[in-house]
Length: 286
Image 1: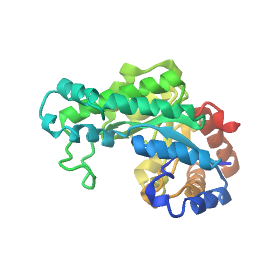
Image 2: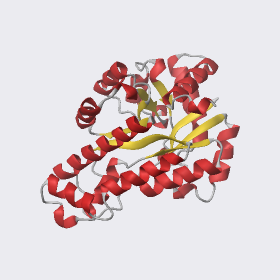
Image 3: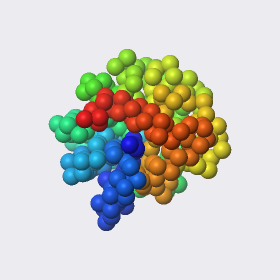
Image 4: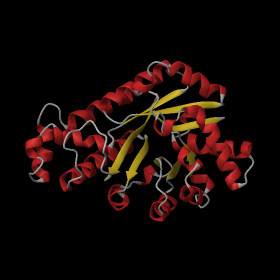
């Protein structure tokens, strides 16, 4: 049995062929797919898709890239202090706190099994829907605050935590050290994990899973990184539709890594499925 622990099967790019994509995944042996939310709208869609398709479960959250939306709604405050920005986005009718409450509402759906993706992102996106996008100090501080809010949600509702980190290892680990709770052990994953020993060391000491994607097929640095990840902390994901992927490609990723690690595919498949199920509190074994 195969398991795609991170996809965006609810995204618009799958609207015309979602049923066929899921059927191809099933034929490839994929039994479970997690649809990951990146903002309130996509989180609601993930929850809806999970009801429609038995194989699909949902995670709801606010991606650090989309934290910029709270600044862009109040562009006149971007140059002001962080505290003033946070107060403004919380006090108006479309603020952070409102969106967090709406995420909480989605937990009424029993197939919503995780919070995220959330985390930190300092990458300067060249293609983005946000005008005047820039990685300012205020933006990073707001990312941290909203990351902390979502960590609290995962702890409070006993959900898995899906962590995004892009070019922000120090900031990500800083927030985790400050907000960590033992309840998160075995319930957290570094999604699309950067090949950074600091991240791996923190993962090993806090029982956090490492998510590996299709880039491992061509990325030599990632291939070397996979070799030092403990098997009991490894899970696979496609991050589809990114990387020109879809959930069925989990099979290709698994076969490649099994050869890389010189492990029998069937035994490896069982290890990965058990890891993935444990990550989501064994709910998906039912």
